[in-house]
Length: 111
Length: 115
Figure 1 (tube, rainbow over the protein chains, first blue to last red):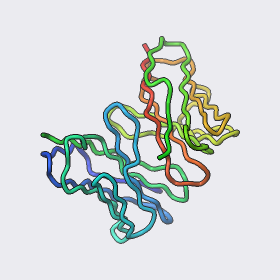
Figure 2: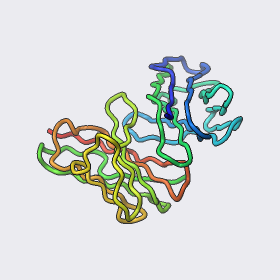
Figure 3: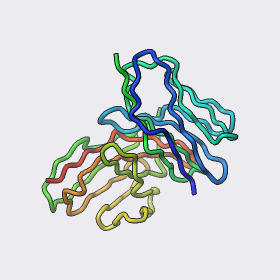
Figure 4: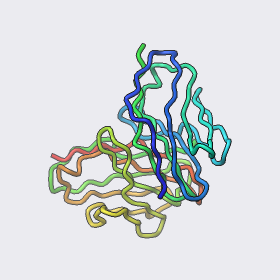
C-alpha cells in the first residue's frame, strides 16, 4: 500500500540554521508529493508540492525535490526563523485519491 | 489561494448532546470534501470523504451513525457528532478540492470538548 515515512521530531534548531526534514514514500503508480505545515492551534496549510519526478517545489524559502530513484521528498530551508516553528507533514496522493500523511515532524526554532 | 472556513472554531458541549460543524469553501466549488480527526501531537486521521449530492464514504472503524456528514451544496459540508461523549473530544479538520484536482485545501479546524 501507499505510505509516507518522515523523521521523528521534535527537531530543535537555532535561528538561521539549515533545516532538513527527511521524507520517504512508498506508492503504487506515480504519486504527487506535498508538504503541509500546521501552526499551533490551526489547520493545515499547503507549503509546496511536486507532481512528477525531478520537480522541485518551493515556497517561503522552503524547497523539496521529488526524487524517484530514492523515493524521497526531503524538505529543506537554508536559514530558518522563529516563525517557522510548526509541525510539518509530508504527504502523497495517487490519481487524486485520498491523501496519505506522514506522522508529522515538530520543529522548534530558538531565537 | 483557495480558502476553506470552518465554524465554530471551538465548541464545548455536554455529554449526550449533538454538535454540528460547518465547512465552507469560500472561493471555489468543492466537489469533494474530506473530514479528518486529529489527536494531540498526532497526524490526521481521515474519517470520511463526501461528494456533493452523494452519501459520504466512511473509513473503516468510523461510525456513520455517530458522525453524520452532509454535503448538500458545492460550498458547504457539515459534520454532526451525535450524542457526543468525552472520547469524541478532538480537533476536527475539513478539507476541500474541486473536480479531480490533487491538491486539498484545509480549513482551520474545530476544537471540540465534550464534558
